[in-house]
Length: 125
Image 1 (cartoon, rainbow, N blue to C red):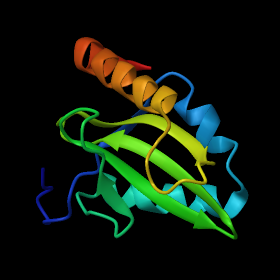
Image 2: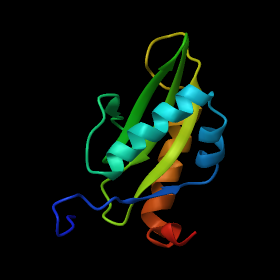
Image 3: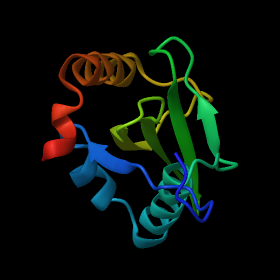
Image 4: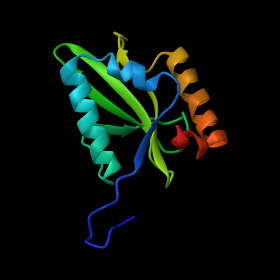
């Protein structure tokens, strides 16, 4: 999507279920970083912290945010033309590497399926 003056048109951001409330609960700097990264995604760019989350749905991406000694994640999908759907936002607490706990993986899969079934009505909120 391009405007006449070659500036990309920003996609709308749609939050799924509690994702917005969860993101707003991040510490101030982590929330700012997440917002900046989502702004880049809206402009069609790929932030350096964005990585694919394999096995959770085609096109599901994760923003990895470090704040002091804590880690935060924002999971989104940007492949649909009408919007970027933020599926989840949470503090990463797992001491065993980068693998997400099973209950978080299930929640992301469920929300992805919900988006596929109910889009673009989610952008009307």
